[in-house]
Image (cartoon, rainbow, N blue to C red; front, side, top):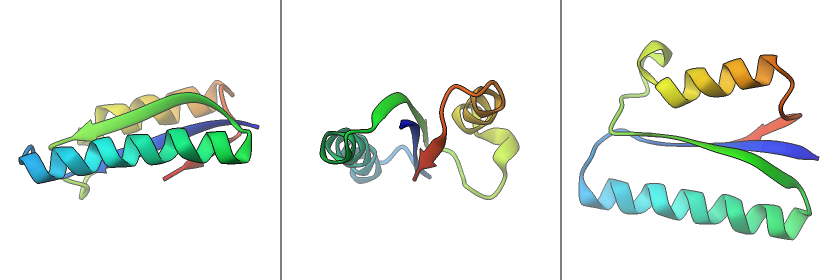
Length: 75
């Protein structure tokens, strides 16, 4: 299955940025285990999760979903 992954952290603090990298690594390992095809990994860093309009990668992911670039999003 073609999938996309979405990662997010709310601050630019070092521990949060480490969390972002850990999330990215998790999705790469996840697709190896499941055999899914990771089409794109979207990541917003240092952006609050309260409003989606501020999350550029999230918006890009929604647009790509409408284009049918993947069948599922993992978060």
